[in-house]
Length: 380
Image (cartoon, rainbow, N blue to C red; front, side, top):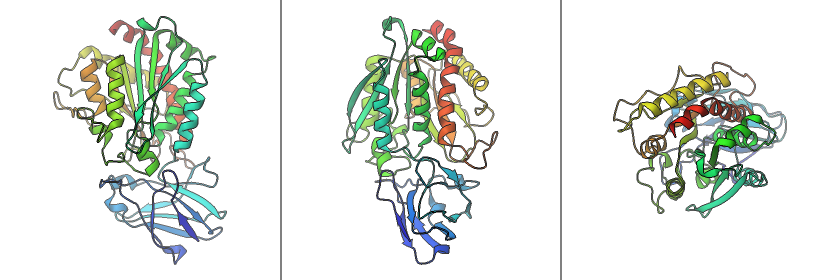
């Protein structure tokens, strides 16, 4: 048997492979950071062999409680990812599985590789609706991609809607979400998208953290920066990803913003708002709640009862993108969270929360946006 992780987004350290019923593994920390939780590795030569893969440092992970009730993802073809028996005792995460063939991949969630990201960008720019801008480079020299999506008619009067994803690279469901979102938005036969594009220009950053994505990080970039704590202090030396995107946002403007994430602990889909910013607008807050209600109607996978505590007035962390952008652009801004586990309101025993379900939610977000479009236009 062999275990390897020397590939895009791979992350594991093998400490013992002598006994298939007691394989000892550890997750590597993000570079220059104490964050870790994401794993992604390949096991070969174990067809028909009952295996217990013990990740022995799981108890020290960034969100160790997220392993309670969690089941790892596995795939033979890197396309279909199913869930396998997994247990957590507070210290060790144990994957208990008998592979059917001699090559299998295990991951914290269905991976979204930088190669697939490149294909996503290529597919998008094939549309006449899309203009691509390379904003600059990351610390590892990767490109920061921005997509402008417009029908080109009367652009000067349209709403500027921003959607960004995967500030935290291990939250791969966010880029799967983007794939569904872009698929619907660029479908010229889709009436929802056509109607939206009559009134909106979309600015889309499908992957905010290419370096962390490729390195197999959970939460940070190449320099160990948590990008969603850099919005009020970004520099090219430490967090060029945020610096470059924010510069573009300041040049273009913004009327609506959504930042797409995944949550390790909560088994629900939900949004978090900007209630604690210093100059809270009740008009914008009403728009935020209207959007939340619209998404409830458009997606049975979405709910509003479980989520993050609301910040007290004036107590928002202004280093977080949603708060910083709501304050500085005077517009509704929100963070969309999806689970690593499953949606407890609509569980799926085989796949849990999955890439495919993330894509469906990406499509539903657009339909909900159309529902609140009259309110957004009145606000502008």
